[in-house]
Image (cartoon, rainbow, N blue to C red; front, side, top):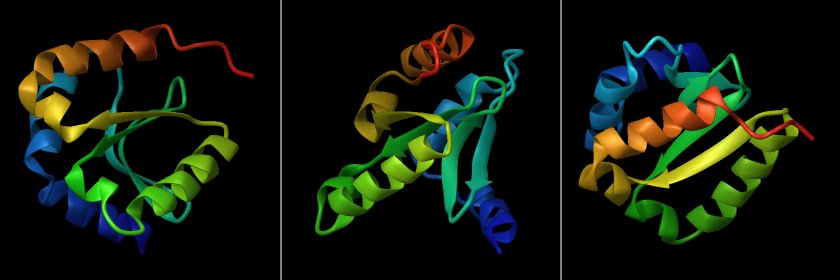
Length: 113
């Protein structure tokens, strides 16, 4: 189910996700988009260093989303992944700068605990 859903999401990525993907791909560092992990689908994932990248739009500040995001973040990190959350507005402002930051982070991630 999640693989099918991930494929569907790849075809309907949000504008910030598309802009970021255009900057990330082809840089030599393998980054996956809409990557299934357990019950979740990560916006982006760098498997070599186990870094998950989530792009958060304004909806993540509304209703029960903040609490759901906390649960999701805790679960992802409990699986041994490092989670990086980036606001969609940052991506829209300068997708190149955000991509460069992600790539630099993935090339020298913090040591694992």
